[in-house]
Length: 266
Image 1: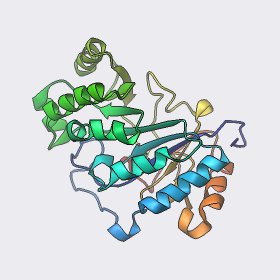
Image 2: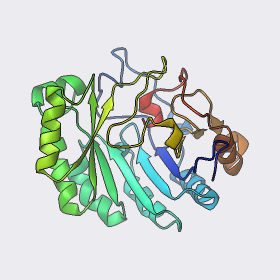
Image 3: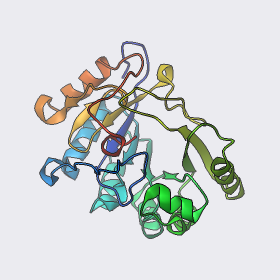
């Protein structure tokens, strides 16, 4: 698929849940969040049908996100199901890593190719503070389990305040270099104010090269993370919503006042 700016749109990011098992300070406000009712969340059958339609239109790269995707019951079945859709060349997942020790081998067996893990510090105390409830050792054990399971490449997403010279960023980079992991630095962004940056080590945030659309957990196709525009697959029909998202994809992001990182997938 091509949008009106002649960008090839071949990448679909799927949020399978708006729920998470940690509460990162830059994602979840102190006041908490209003979660979607369970009956609004897309079923796996609906997700399968959306992906199948998207592949027929030209999508060949799919990433499963959340919230935290590994807390969605049956997510292994979803992975195994999506793998069977002919035309998907790259199936991956983004996770906070807390449950990866348990899921790495089953994910690989189900057909997942690679994984991204969020890791902002190597300091256990600071990690607990940043995530409010997280355990750094579980994440590190999960990363090693993913290596053992053969998930490759393993990419580490490290959120930074200003630059990769920060002490936490340097320590994460050293850890990645020592363990054959790829690191990507992501400067803190703000959906509401439209504050976004290019991701160091990837194409995210670089609008002229953007090749993605997003599916929210409740069935909205979003052409751009930093835009309020969305197209409901249940109201419009899957194909119409996908085509509308691509046709209306903006040249560049502005601001998003309706969504949050936790329910769009970042």
